[in-house]
Length: 84
Image 1 (cartoon, helix red, strand yellow):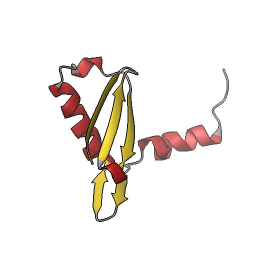
Image 2 (image 1 turned 90 degrees about the vertical axis):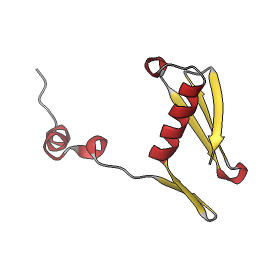
Image 3 (image 1 turned 90 degrees about the horizontal axis):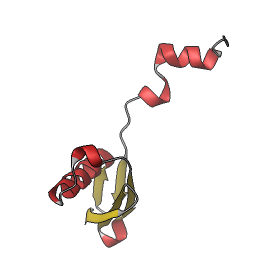
Image 4 (image 1 turned 45 degrees about the vertical axis):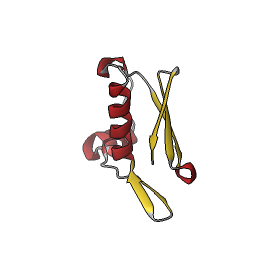
């Protein structure tokens, strides 16, 4: 059995980047949106279009604040957009 590296042991103790709390905010002009808020709006929009929560495998997000839009693609084939 291979020994764990010192980085792996340190991440187990401290939590590492993957476990760190993150706050990402997209700002454009006088507007700003948190990414968590955008993801929730995308989820709500997709659910309103008949997509089931269990059907989400992948969500790709493209933020275009200059167009006041956030475009998304679910599972590579379902497209939609919400306002920024």
